[in-house]
Image (tube, rainbow over all chains, first blue to last red; front, side):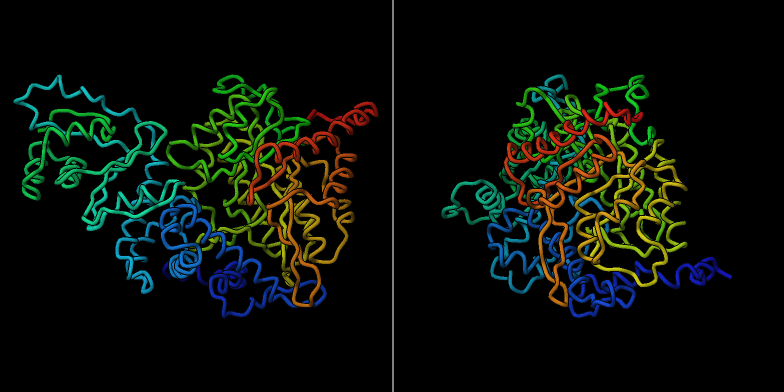
Length: 266
Length: 309
């Protein structure tokens, strides 16, 4: 007999209080499980609802804490309604709440009531990258002058090791400008930018930094993060944007602390 | 009493990365990141701090930097919230590994977890959920505690839950269940006095009777917190373990009784939501410290002091 069948026949699983208890935790239309009651025959509808409320509200709160700019843009009522749908559809699978919300941007993209804010999902992607950078492993960034020791004729064969916090965000919308305006405490004001923006997120020390990437910069960084040679990454960036400025991009990435090491590739 | 549950400073000092700050007889608070700057400016550096282990399970960044700074100056209590020790499935080995790494890294004075569960199959519910008290569940929970203690190499303090429902299938009282876990695993206990008051109110029994049945000799830490009031289906009072305000008068009174019986135990003020400015939280800990100090005098004079002092 296969092992699975043996286990499912285990009498210990027949009265699984946890399975019974969780069945209605994310579904407000379900009655409380038969397995629970109040004292002395008291009902357990409102009592069970305390758990249901704790689960849903605390997970919405967790998303609100991880996506503060998204919340500020939509306002709390819109955000919490949207987050409630997401929590019920995709509850966390890890007990680490700072890992929760990896699917939230994709959900926002599909969310009917957010269709009038087509850039909102990219703001959420940016916030997810920010949180990843915040919790990423600490590492000393490569110094700005580190490439000086590499002979110019070998520069094209250089491979960069990305900092554990480094992320590239690409958007058809001015995501970095919208993000910056909504993550500070000041008034947001009118956002003048209208075109696509790409951004670098990293954390060279304790502060997460967000930088606009110049034309072709995201293609360049994506290739470098994938371990491609500098020459190949630059070729890809030029192919995407003819105005790609190689030396300015390298200087900008080094200055932001996007890498931890550089070495000669094969 | 439970000399094992409070990690002896002398055992830590051999390979220690941090000073072996003793925690005995101190009042402390939850550590909240927004208080870091104010705390670092405090002098003298009294008390201790408790952190939720899961918040420090990222690879790096500001959380670890903050906890390292706190741990240099203070005893730290590592409080696990989502090990799911009371769950019906095996423990999450990856999570247990992360927990052990934190114990090794920060050398906490106290390590605790909950008699509750929060993960089932692949879903994490982010709440402390209740379990029935039966021979089957006591065996499973004892196995889980053994596994945690075996992995981290030291005993834990197990916290009594606050609950809103009962399981008619339960065949043991909560205090009998907890006493049996102590007997089987050698774990210590974290007595949450607010939880005692909440559960007693919600399930219409006497908090004093619960405390009379509770194995107080094995308590290594006390929790105090604020609660909120709601109504059950019959319109009667239902208390909610909200941790969003000051400790209630009734809970202070129970705390005073417990400390009168046990002597001064490390006591933590939990405040996890609507978090006040640091001086407000610090004043709440000072109120607990005054009760601990008041009993410390009479306790030691009467010769009841135990090894944990």
